[in-house]
Image (cartoon, rainbow, N blue to C red):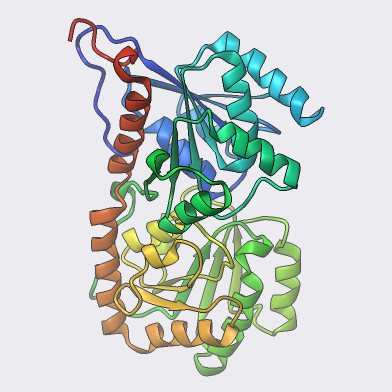
Length: 381
């Protein structure tokens, strides 16, 4: 079940209509954040729907199951043509808030929302990526003038927004990602070590699972029974499978494919590993920590804001199989310390990364942007 949200108030409420604009609903942390925001919204006070700039993507059925409408404006045409198509659609939908996610969606959504007369534009930066070509970056900066609030999912992402996009500090707020704590239970503290690690994420170059596989080769040399579950799919899968065979670890590594529910894989593991070269605040890492797993992760992006090095896991330099292998071995070699790290990680997620608090923070921003004219006010209050 999603995080508990307040039920519809007894008195008449005109809901705040929020439209989220994304590039597509592919497999990824950004898309899971959007799904959580619309699925766990305060029903009756906020309504939500999603517009994709390109195609809907594989996560669209999850939104449909949550009763959230998803549509696309189509890939054809130049940026101005797509902005105009989106503006026409927003004039029909008449949202109170357009909430864009990452630079491409912001570029299109902010211009379209302004043309359509939408009262409030909110933007979330989920990582370090930019808008692409120079002309697009210029247009994106211009769109920032019309955006009432910017949210960064990490202090690192906030720094990028200030320095690269020149976002004024008064408009900028950090809201770390969160997870539904009820969906993930820590494993039995007295359970035996299983010599099993798990990683969850898109199989893509930025996740650098190639470095992870090379690290596994080092670990297996010391711990032949070591196993790794790779949960996820993507464009790099075939190359990674070939690399696994070339390294001679195909019996130690299982490619599990994409699963919306990763809890069973987390429950079978001793540790979570993340080898990315760039990150915001990954949902997969938060889910693993909520499951009581210590983490071996690269020290990039916002990961230092999640993993406390030596307390909830180990942080290492990106691109180093040797360093990542040492971190995994350290966890496997000391089960008692691993359990303490896992318990500390669960407490950290409970205290700082609760989904209910994240949704509440975003809804507060929507209302603040709309001010006294907020249609979410209870009639007669």
